[in-house]
Picture: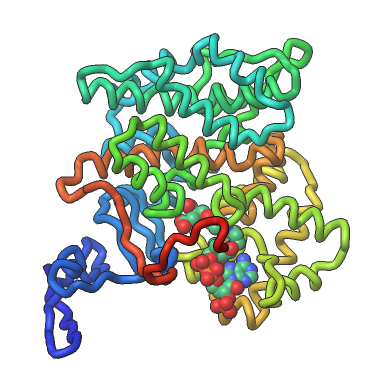
Length: 425
Ligand code: SDX
């Protein structure tokens, strides 16, 4: 504990302890506030409120720092596999060779989806959004894999099934939505390549694995793997705090991520860039983003925590340029994105509001170059974020201070009134 703060309320004085994290972050511990003072705090959107202590991910929004279990995301994006990163987040350290091999075998052995699930997909309206389908299918996994008695085995098996099957389920929704034959996972392909093959292989045009594309997907998923207590992670923790099964908690995280202010922004960025390409009026978009009366936001810009360039956006931008060069793709949306970023970063409004490109600004262009359809962009975010959600859920399970999440409120409705019978209303 590091010192305390004094709270003077009426003629009373209270001392609240201040706690400090390993990176020097400080928080007032208000866990006894209500009992001691009768007061609660009010913080819409929890912008000033920490929900937990966590040892998984550290973000410094002013310096643009992001580390998973202490390792800078730049190093992991340059040198790690996505499997290693998932293992690191979930287990707290990188796997040795033997552990990584065992992890790979387990993922491979659990990559198939129960055949009965296909009817779920086939009954879904073809126009359904893949995020809605994914959230339902993940929740449905409990029905196919009943809870094991041994808690450790239950957790390990559920984690492995989720990490492996989420790829298969995502690719299945894509194939079935197009009326194409479902492609099964292959034991000879690693995590990222296997997903790409399930998405794009076809009997008439076998999919050729391109290492540049596999590498881009590897980096894409590493950059998305975790990000402290963001909206969808907080949903997983809150739903998980009721001690519901992990499939249901992850399903809630997928639902939260779907929102255009959160994970849905990567799809919204591409739609925004396409609109600018059509209207040829970038200035209009900038003006609308600044107009308080207009709900339009510059998608892919701004962040609750980063008040400087999102370090993930920096890596994504570089990777985007290099991938499009290697694939010899000239995407007009990339030129628009570069120009929009340059204009916005020189504009006083964006400077004063500390608005910079975030993770989602360039990610859609990368996904488009890989061949992912726009309506699956947020599904790609979900596959990347899954290890982070799992790690955060596991940490909450092991936290002795963790309890059922149940925020308070300040009531502003009518004071006591009487029931009025229908003939008197
Ligand atoms: C993700 O939390 C995470 O870690 C999320 C994430 C993760 O990895 O999990 O990083 C992933 O969700 C990235 C964010 C993706 N969303 C978008 O790109 C949507 C566009 N961005 C904005 O909607 C907004 O920036 C948010 C939602 C991301 C953050 O907004 P906040 O922190 O709630 O801030 P705010 O909406 O209160 O805005 C503060 C001010 C306002 O102006 P004032 O009323 O103070 O004058 O900044 C303005 C806003 O109008 N503003 C913007 C803007 N973002 C904020 N103005 C124009 N365009 C924008 N994009």
